[in-house]
Image (cartoon, rainbow, N blue to C red):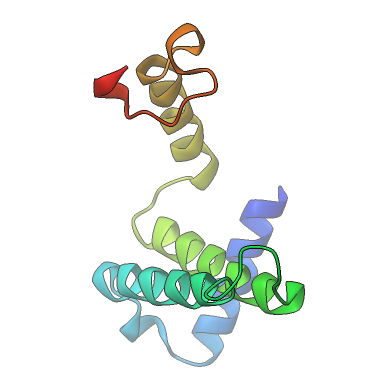
Length: 108
């Protein structure tokens, strides 16, 4: 079993042991991703260079965890959807037009 699937199984076990599945609707999980993302951003609130790596790790783990649970709830394979999106990004941002630029694709 790959590490992504293994992580999903552990998260589902934690969820199920506590009977939290009832709260894990797609909307609630999406909200939780946003909340945890804001908490991750808070780690960098007052400085781009000074942050507590342990706090960042914990908040990033929370974001990943909710993303994995949402993917599972929607019966999506996390790696498949990431690879699919990467393919689309390559097409939207060809290297010869986008290299070294932060310009949005429709302005390249």
